[in-house]
Length: 304
Image (tube, rainbow, N blue to C red; front, side, top):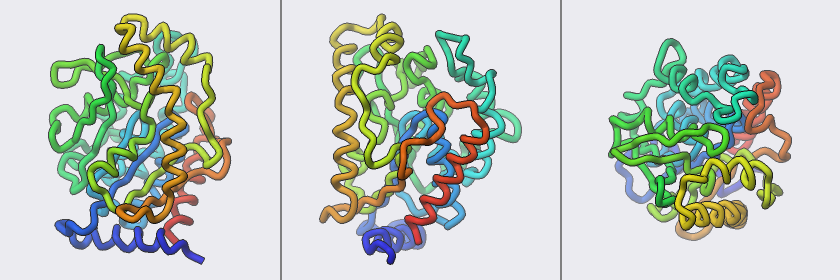
């Protein structure tokens, strides 16, 4: 039997596509990142696109790969994005463990997004009915800043580039509007609170982690590699980043405890049932394809 809350959200999304100026309904899509794990959310977005929901959202929120996936969805290029994951990102040119200072080659990624048959239709993103909201961390203050595609149309590719600069894996800071930034996913992988603060009534959240997942403290990558990455940050900023990193589980707790109807807003969650997706730095083409298929099927199931 269909979930009644899911049916209400589905109905409101269809209504929003027909009546874009309807202020009674404000819709949001919140997409979690996770490097190559986010191929799962791209599969979900392909499913949503094929069901006709591209024009159903007022806002699309994302950090890290979630924002990049959201851009391809808004441009009606979800199928292309799934092919980029399987055919162009599962190689040593993009992911190379021998490049210790830059395991992910962001410049390679940007070439894919701007050139040839893999290019993102940036104009379609900018002209979309939705507003793409990027989560960024400012250097050196460590403040989380949200950029809107509607307000910064000329910076869209820099915003996407910043979303790919995962600390310790891609050793860069990107200049946007005269200031330096890194990806906001390190402290806010799923920016749902921003959707609620903007008064969104119907929120679809795509997670790349299961209901049971909680981030374990003291992981090697953040206690060692990331500490080296942040060595040029002021101590106050560095301490703030690591404090927020340790509290990421509070975001997961909030999302799952507020699934359904919360009075002023409703939340639908699309997520894997187990944490066995191909991971952050996977180059396994078959497993990435499986991620996409699982995301596609889970979204389809949620919208039945």
